[in-house]
Length: 452
Image 1 (cartoon, rainbow, N blue to C red):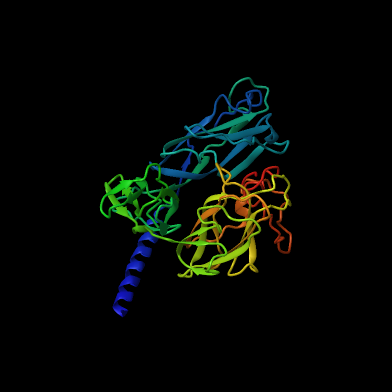
Image 2: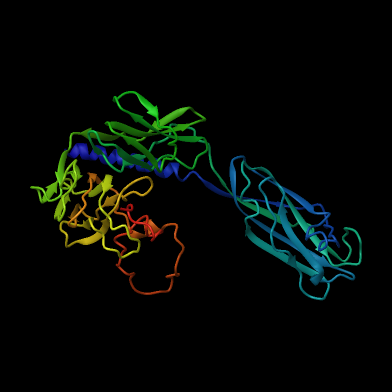
């Protein structure tokens, strides 16, 4: 047993070392080039020409292919002579290579005297959108307020030996078998006859190298793997199935045609026990089950007040996916309306735990019940119905997950901020809109999950 643990640790260390090496291959480098062609002319028509010179000074900086530019520095001097003044100086830098831009600000000299003024700017982003490296062309546009008509070095000029420095990251090409990382799934067990949507992700895979291609793959017979259409994001993939399926991430180096794979993730479909709310089992310990209203496949009854608790056998978080949902709502809009028939969800082993949700209405189209994930290993449900009108109720899949529970902020990701909490001290309110957690929190005139 000790030898087996030692081998596992050694393998883990090898994997971690590989990931660290693979992800540290981006090199930060700089290259500086100076202009050495003598004094640079300035344009008296600079202002009239939309702050550009008709005689810009050009300088080419060559960086390696596949380099990514992270910033540009420039240092230069301009000198006022004769009738010129330092306050007459105007200048700005432009990158004219494809993807480059100009500085938005025009820089002016100061002082009513002659003499030399130094200009020094750092970390400009004017070349950051250039791809593939190579020759990067810059133009220093310099102007002056002058009585002359044409570009010249009269009155004001750019001094010789000005310098541009380009900062860049050099990403190497892959040159060996890549690593597929550690793959995980949102659920590992499904129930026979029930469609399950599985979310996949990998971490620690080879990255930060040119030539890497990612592809999620699936297998249903243990040997024949096929690509999952459209699933090339190593951080996120989705697949819906009713059968047992294996998954893995394939990472291919296009320069060597070598492919590395993640671990295989198993999703197993098995016959599941079904449990009704208010049935013989008040607390159910399971990692894979079906959850029905009191009527099972049929309708629930009037005047119900029933509850049930699910706890995972493995100790993992519990997850509830509602496949169908149909209860009587009161058909009225407004956040605080009482629902005729409602299912409440509690985050814990009893209905005295924190209340997460209250569901009422019809699930259809995009108006769906959100996935429920416990913060611990238990979820509790309570259902109440009034004295008239019954419906089909619900069917939910209860499974386990390593995912963290959803928080309120995830339901408002696209909502505008009401206020900036920076600088405030204290905790936020723990009041939640239990009846409109998802869809209606944005549309209060509609019922959740659907109208009666």
